[in-house]
Image 1: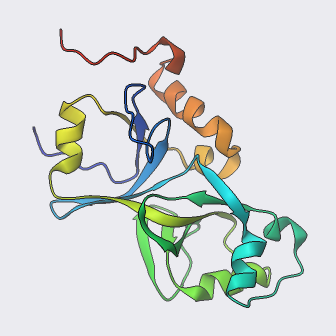
Image 2 (image 1 turned 135 degrees about the vertical axis):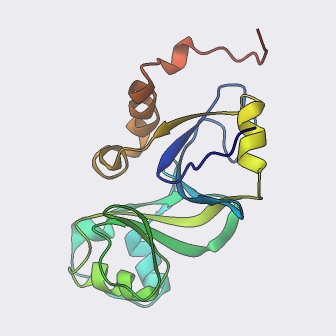
Length: 186
């Protein structure tokens, strides 16, 4: 398959994808190169809030809205590690610039800033990430596992988790319910 860079794209799981980690998911690709890919599932909240995470890290906050933010299942790799997807990029200890004004930070300084009310304007917090070996996404695309579309930060940061997959499908002009569970080639 031809080389493609899917950084700042959504991977939309096809209905036939039965993998329990990725069934019915919308994944935001933060980095894609000849070394592989890294992304975060952005539509699967887990049974934790930011308050729970901050409490585990012994970080206090008085901001009730911040503490109520849901934590996402970012993917099956390093489930004990936190990832903050945010805009603007800012100046944190460990940030990867994904695209334009979107950053991915893994350092504690951003969580401390969030707790004290100095957080980036928009954010999504996840535990774990999704990773692919070199050429793996390209192979999965050739197997009709995923649809891809350039990402819209508005979908990630402004919509509730349950609406993100449908909104990403709308970017393609496709209704998810119109897709078949059957895999085939014409």
